[in-house]
Image 1: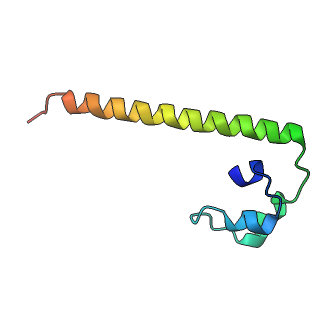
Image 2 (image 1 turned 60 degrees about the vertical axis):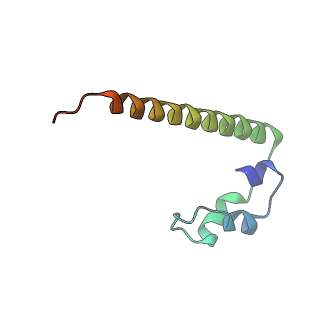
Length: 77
């Protein structure tokens, strides 16, 4: 996503950036990366990525808070 928003349009280069856990090969990944990168689509992608990252931060904050609260609970021993 960041590469697309930074201006990368080469599907081969973008496919090489895929997460190692993705089992699909480069050829499979490259096909949907060929397209029309219109300004309004890039804007929507940028907004969505910002939202995603913001929510990931909020989730991490909740995880930390829950962990702290669980540590304060009395043990059943």
